[in-house]
Image (cartoon, rainbow, N blue to C red):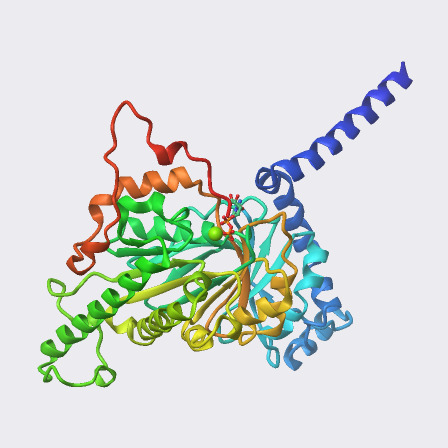
Length: 457
Ligand SMILES: Nc1ncnc2c1ncn2[C@@H]1O[C@H](COP(=O)(O)OP(=O)(O)O)[C@@H](O)[C@H]1O
Ligand SMILES: [Mg+2]
């Protein structure tokens, strides 16, 4: 009988352990909220001082304090850890503020992040500078990038799209006002088009003119045609669309000039103001130009085409140089973007401030995107596994970088959003000749886009 009881007990605990291990793998968020969080909090509370001491983050106590301890308790005076704020649990981890002791800097804590993560049994520890003397520790309980779920409270706004999730479980926001142009690099099947898709649907609900150039006959961008104000599906059409955009940009500069009372002959570069300074009823809607596979615009087969190519590249460079003030923003996607593409490639690249690098096949490609940001970012981009498409390394303007991943969004869902928001497209008379044809939706025939399988390349 006792044997049976023992067997049942052992079996029961084995099942519990097995269940916990399964839950941890299959439902990491639920596991974190129920098991991981209490365990980590208990570890943190019991081992805080000793862990900080082991990580070299403690300092000698103030003299009055040492004297007081010695006088009252006769105990040995121990070094003190940074003062800890309250622990704030979240659905993905927990947060806690630390007040740095005199002589410490945030980099000291960041250097120990890996040790802290092991000590407290969490997936990762991120350190953020809050204000002088205070840092925030963000403990992440599990790998949030394996199955992306965007945070519920998002910091969206005009021309700000929360497009992906960072590894510290905060949203990565693509802010066109802060970073006007962006380069999205990655090997084929690495998730570039998914990134564009997320961005485009995010902008679809805003009063923004969306323009696409997709030289792969439009397989990626044509499904979004109802919301696009202009679409070029081969380089011939692109060669006509780009000058129209440049003309529109020049018209906008003229508008700003007349508003400022400057004679219309003044060169563009001298105008410092932008469309955002215009009164709202006169202000033209911002334009975002999406280019999927930019190399298609650069590649030429014959000598005759070369002239046209140079023209297109010049237009692109002008848009990148002067577009921001006219409210024209570029989102450029490509597999590689180096000098080998030809004249003007590096000049255009230098204008694209934002950098997103998906999985690449060689270090040289990663360097094209992130080389000027940080050498570690290049290594991180080279280490992205093919099993996780959509994972990317993004550099920010402050020289930092982080890993992000877009949420999965099917082509059909994105197309439905574009259809539903088609009426929100602002008027752009200059682009009317390039408006894509949208077949009317009939009740009997199923919507072709909705039935199409997601294009994978
Ligand atoms: N964030 C993601 N989560 C899940 N699957 C993704 C993600 N991003 C891309 N994929 C998948 O990876 C494949 C390639 O993505 P795609 O965006 O077409 O790559 P690219 O444009 O770089 O060739 C597609 O099948 C897509 O569904
Ligand atoms: Mg693609």
